[in-house]
Length: 279
Ligand code: SAM
Image (cartoon, rainbow, N blue to C red; front, side, top):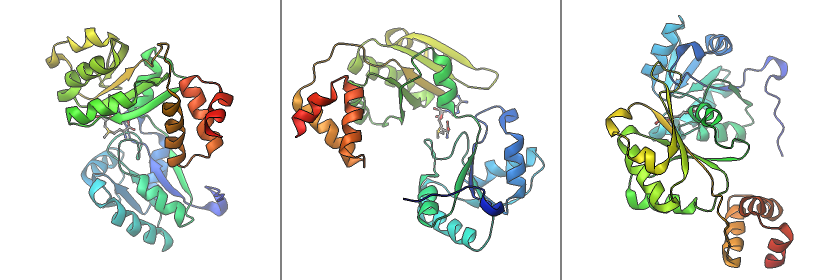
């Protein structure tokens, strides 16, 4: 077990800074204050970070940490923090680590007993989800599906039984393909497509997969999040599907007790029934 107080003795933790997903006014005064106090701004794209910070009159030394150098760059940043430097990290938009680099840096920091903290802002999926009208209490964030149709189909198939709202990120040139694949695998579910969030052309399109997949592709430009309703069908799961789902969650690091709880909630099956299958 590890307990880390973020701000003990005037500490400057490794800050993960959420950056605007479109509207610059969402860069908070706290973000500005913390970035101004930092020695090094590590960023997914140092040019974007430079441009963003210049809009707020902040000039800082930048350092590149992107998907392709994440491990080495993270280790270098940890060594700088150990040498007393104040380091913050930001990705191009929204939160680092959410379909963006940042996770390896956080893991390295934790391993090195460096406190990690976040500076809040918006994340595209939270904005989309809360305004979608779909159930928000329990949801599953998936992020991007594979660009390859066959793989994407398999991924969608693995989500078929989920009772909860599912959230995808998608690129405009693949959105019609994805809507069609979702309909083919999941049936004609209710969806909400949220595009250009926080920007002047923000739009929410709510309807069925059938309706949305027939929209003129030209009208679906910009950045987008797709929110899809969970499965509300009566599903009868086979016993081996239940036990392998428990084994899957155990393989992710959950205790058997927690894995049983998750599967019981997900498949709407009594916990004692699952325990009887396992023990
Ligand atoms: N880290 C980001 C976050 O916290 O939301 C996500 C980064 S991911 C590389 C980029 C994807 O996020 C886009 O392809 C799109 O699906 C979604 N996205 C980002 N900004 C958006 C916006 N303004 N409106 C809708 N979707 C957006």
